[in-house]
Amino acid sequence: MNSSWKGEPKPPVSEPVASVLDASAVLAALFREPGAERVVRALERGAAMSPVNVAEVVARLSQSDWTEGAVTSVFAELGIEIIPFDRATALLSGAYRRRARHLAATDWNAS
Image (cartoon, rainbow, N blue to C red; front, top):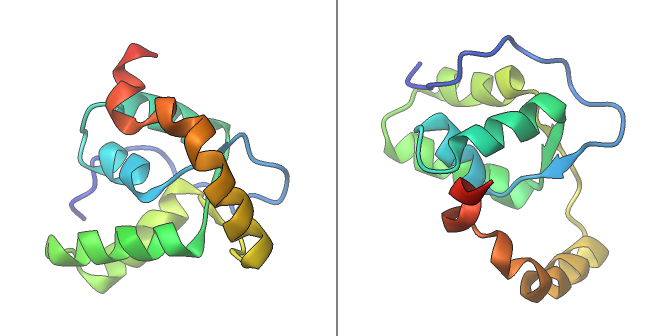
């Protein structure tokens, strides 16, 4: 597998998670890009993603010649819970964009 993640596989999250990650955060951790350390800490505390962001990560890893097995196993290894993304969640997510703009991946090195 091409992943830089060296943690132990984690069980699926069955309790509230500490962080909801987007595709760019997970890709930063996998490719050791700026902000990776912060993402790893979030993963250690428990994290979730929407299916939309999971699809984006899968597409990017597939473009990078990851095998289907490696792509599938990365989510199990990271212990990321995949949460439903319905209409209410989509509307709420869109409403948070303006409030969370300052938390962009480019700012993660400050933490």
